[in-house]
Length: 162
Image (tube, rainbow, N blue to C red; front, side, top):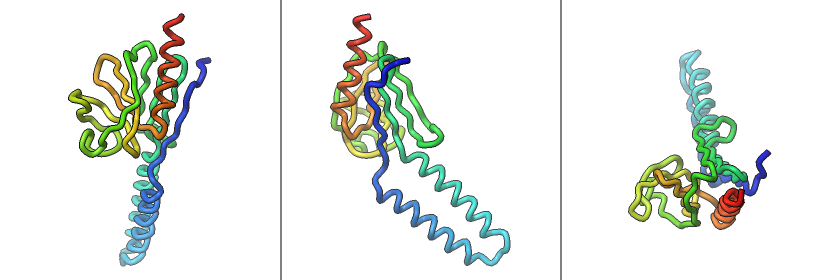
């Protein structure tokens, strides 16, 4: 079983959760004002599904094992994931980027970083680890990019010795 060298769960800011709760409360209040007998139940069901889907997208999990880097967007149901075998990683480094300018925001994004087309997988903030696999580079958002980078480097150097 591969050794876990680093694990991080990154969540969106609390004000986004508060916004989701406000949307649900507002939607439920509006649903009870509808005169049709079946409409409030349909609206409530749609609101609950939408909030569950959005809340699921509010977590980014990054795991570095001795053989791979695994990144997953989604708390209960993974909506996007990526496995990067350690031996395919050419280089990695901690970076500060501009999510709005470089990638157009947060989430699964594509943009340019330092003149190269880059994939972005981030949930908040402006720090992460740039990973080059020879194809399109990936920036993984992190609250502790130096620790994530060190874990990737440790995994890369431990596989070179084998």
